[in-house]
Length: 447
Image (tube, rainbow, N blue to C red; front, side):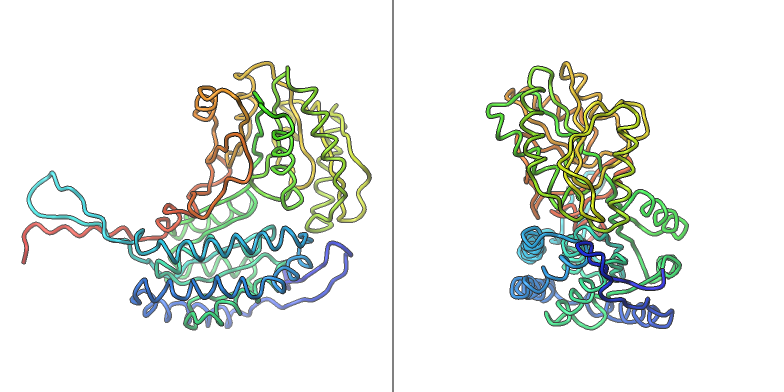
């Protein structure tokens, strides 16, 4: 990696390129983050969250310009881009409003002897965030928001195809009044990332990205005894066992698959439908998918990867229904049926506007297919039976289950997965706890 480059996937045109930081520049940013931590950690929560409120306001004021940047970088539609920025605003405001309560001292009922005990939540130092291209602002918000409120300082490595959004965020943090060194954008190579993680002043790493990237970073972090949070891939099931309104279920499945042109870790990628509902559901779902115009995915490489997966599925016996042919990074929606369990494609994550659909005979088979995946991020369930909803949700091997709807995420709700989807949680109270020193103060006798 010699540069961070913007290639507009809509046209394939290379627009701008930025060099990676030199080792000296990386060292200067580490020094700045360490220096800032010494004072930032001692500021009051009220002082820190005042800047988060200003940061949210700047996102709102500059949303049009911010949206244009990620439209160029990864082909996001304007509607999706503005929606992403809106979620960022809600996250920064959420932590501004709730951080003081989350970080308040926790009293422990002592049963082992005399005296008192409290647990304090305090910052630990510099954190490195390694971010993906699919949500260039949102992923930063859910990492940086709680940790800045806590008092940690941030080194933030954007995806190589998203340098301008990275620079725009640096400008937002600076203009909001965050002290120099509190938030630091870094254009780093993989080798420089390894060196940053190894620096004794860096206390933790958060990665959102692929399995491969997460495993590589976790190995380096483990060698250096650094805490790591991983939010990796997903192949979320969308299970349909009962519907009161077929169109509602179809619309939810469509939105779950097609948000951000299907390039979301927790998209509903595998649609699992009970036999008695299958024909009607799939007919409506396929018609809705194919009626959507082709959109660009994030890059030509991403389009070629998805095309290869679809081709291998068809070659192994699956049937593809699609509205057209791929044109560069422009990828038409498609629906795959007849994908055989046990093959390579069955276990892969499809990152783009193509869904796999499976017919099942009963609830048990639906659960079996849903859990037959190396991933365990999110899942979706439609049913008209409250007992079934509870029963199935209990058995799904996933970090999140959404029942009878799509779009249930929020700044207050923990986000994360199990198995090869990673570990740790972001957002909500759980997100601010991940990189906190939960310090016990035990007083046996008052001084």
